[in-house]
Image (cartoon, rainbow, N blue to C red; front, side, top):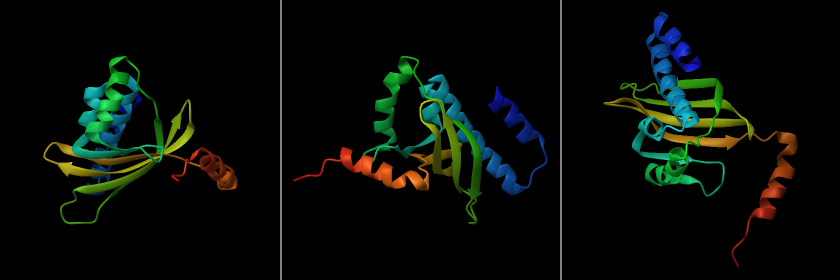
Length: 160
């Protein structure tokens, strides 16, 4: 409901070209998050380009869209999604003639992980703005970084 209200407010207000484009990009990202929360795989994956990448929090998670869909669809089919509530998003439209590339960063709240970060790139296609790459990451306070790195090193198996 919030996404719908925010979308209506954004589309009703007078906007410059930049803010209109930024709002259009934000709508796509919001749709992705809302679809994941509803476990709506069809709508979720419709927000991405066919050759998109999803980069997760684990160092081995650099998924093609095909591989990520294969991983996520069984969860969506069981009605299990994931909810990340975005805030403090910054969208930048590339200052190039086509106005067809955008990047963003956002803070996200999640019940299990607390505050996380999302960032990515979108491209304007014949079907509108689509996500080319999405990166989900954990925000680690600088004061905790050494301890977190030490824990990661303990979990990392180095090849002989």
